[in-house]
Image (cartoon, rainbow, N blue to C red):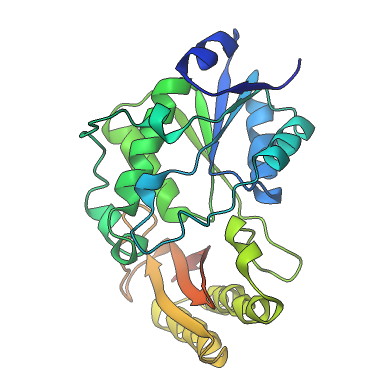
Length: 278
């Protein structure tokens, strides 16, 4: 069956088939990380829908909404190659009617770590995700673990609001040199890219330790070695369920997350670590 491009609600209704539906929400500029999510969705469903929508609600006034890469023709080629059934590509006007007032609040978890650096970002993200769930009506949806706080908040929203969607996480896909794949990587110059590798090196150094203080110290040491071209936003070691900082007595799984600006590009990354194993 040929790939269907749905640009509005009516197109989505017309494209729906019998069987299970999986949604892979994206902002386009698709790369191998997105491909891995699509493949995960393909295995679990009869119909795969990929949304391509650069959501203005999750960008702050000084962020990169206007220059965020928009490569729709290339995205369609990726979707065709991966056997996607439907690409949902609405306009801003289709997604947000005039006079829109109601949205989703991300709560306290949306105001810490990444949310502290980007106020309102997670409110906008959850609002568009809930709208996509209501429009596409998927049985399951797949999101990348690279945006770990986003994934945790979507799971929290689904639980708190009784949304009948199974949320799956896909592992972070990396370049051979360790850099986490991101649509924003194309902004990096060759020199910037070398500096940006400090993020994944810092996470690996931290993950090799077993206690919170040692994990933080090891990661900070690597980041400091990157020099002034890397502007650290945060390094956080958090409970994966709440994204609150863990203390020295914490046992079990935690997320070590980092955000930094390299040149004009802001990058995020994270790894899962095990603290104080018995």
